[in-house]
Length: 249
Length: 279
Image (cartoon, rainbow over all chains, first blue to last red; front, side, top):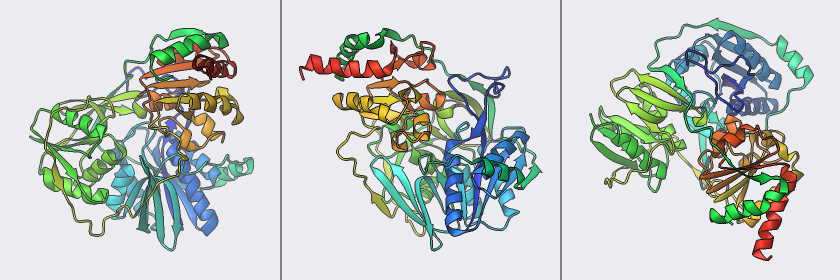
């Protein structure tokens, strides 16, 4: 099994959104970075499949040079090598998909292409689907369950009333959600090994955006003034009064 | 230009999408698709029905998925989870709605999904045109699995959610939250820290990458209020935060606050409930 996982470097935002002066990005001076939670589960799942069945996991990202940190994290989880499309700019979903497709086409075909259902930051819900169309492959989204055997993927998608199951032939594209698995904590030896794994860096030029970001805005509405019902367990009678007023007790 | 509004039956988010469609200025016609769910075939049918018109869908999993198929087929931009449209400019949600992006669409038609609960449900009664696409070899649902919930109220449907974060401290610590939730016929939720630590299953996680809930009351116990979590509980009608840190961000999202140790406060609330009920 050869599996490609697409990932994206995103800031760990904490409790408050603070923007840069030009309102083009989140101020990240004091923030750490990670990959989107859905994608972390995607990499973990790919590694588990290859651990069980043999093969190779390749991680692919489009991002600034610092995104190599996230590729190393993915390789510490067990991915074998990485492709890094290097650009400091933010790309829209269409351009991102085109760049990923071009990178994929430079490789031997994969059996499975794994994306996050949506990125934590931009939330466009479409890159994996666009890549599937460009490659002419079937796509199933939002997976909370995946099993791969005999050239087919059984895909479980969570819906309000349970799970919808799809069965597709490989090669295929899947987009996954957090909860698919509980990703491992990489061991120290795994992190050291990850530092020696190959990263193929390729500079890329961003085309014009067809969904052009003009500016970011922190929505109004946060900053409520909470009514303090009390301190410590002595607040319990007042809490119960409020529960009764709200009609939930 | 007219606007095709893609809707699903008995779906509040679809009625909100109709409101977005009505805000675009053109004539609105409503379309629904029958038969097994097959996003690529559904998208092909919508494209045929729409001609050159704008297409709007709900900001649900299916709405975003079908519209993404439409956009991929037409090689057009898609603005997902839109909160407002001004001509070719949109405001759309990022970070699960905790940040907005203003963006310009460079295309001769607009493909949009409506951010959940950013629009009121449309009360205009429009007869939906029903499409029945042939599936051919389209990817489609082959089986539906209904989980055994043991008769418990589900997190997404609960009127009260009692949710715990890092401050709960351990898997065992959730016992007092379970007890309060049971007294209120509610469900137990948790933050991402809790599922990452393995204290609760991911099915209990409320947040941007977990379940998005909209109960009458959300009780956040020992939750700091990271944007990841707020994205999942901002649909709650009322929020009660219990936290020992008076500076915690969660209080800026709360309607009611109790400051102190949740391990003392939560059992005290359960005891008080039993007392007033005489049980």
